[in-house]
Image (cartoon, rainbow, N blue to C red; front, side, top):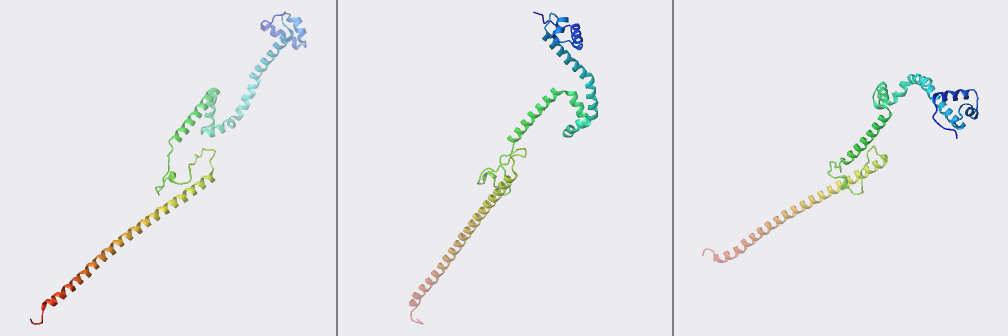
Amino acid sequence: RPSSGAWSPSDDATLMAARTQGQNWGQIQDAYFPNKTANACRKRHERLMDRRNSEDWDTLKFETLGKEYMAMRREIWSPLAERTGDKWAVVEAKVLGSGLKNLQSAARASTRRARLSASHDSHNAPASYTDDSAIGIEDLDGGDFSVSPDTDCGFDPTRQQQQMQMMGAQIHQQQQQQMMREQQQHHQNRQYIGGQVMQGRGHSHHNSLGSVTSERNMGIPSIINRGPAGV
């Protein structure tokens, strides 16, 4: 069986020249490579052609790439520069000098930092809200009035407005109830004070009547005890 040993540079040159002359793989194998198979000659030729195309791209296509890139530099980097707030030339130099792997690592680190910051802010958020009426949201009847941050995709302005209207109505209702309780207490206090005053006046009038009656009762015996006039 023919050997499939390594190909030398001279073997590669012979293979390419024979293929250029229009010979098929069986003819090339019989004439030049009796120790290799026709299929091995075909595969080696394919690899050599791929390498040549790669080398041609490095020389010719790279020049075209460079030409087109220089013509589109500002157009390519300006959108990214607008998002970072830097000049496009500075962004270009930073990206090309960092490499793709470093940029990927930086992007992951930024994502982790933003996630940790959002979690920290949510934990430190105030637990309740209290307005000038000293009535907290948690004291209201009717459920949860918590509003998600603006960064929440579930944010509903209409629902928020309805909740705020309900909250305002309930606060107003509790304020009215508090005012009514204060007015009732004030009215009761006035009635109590008025009753005490009237009771005091009644007692004084009773004492006065008793004194007059006593004087009248004392006057009758004194008249009797006086005796006849002039005696």
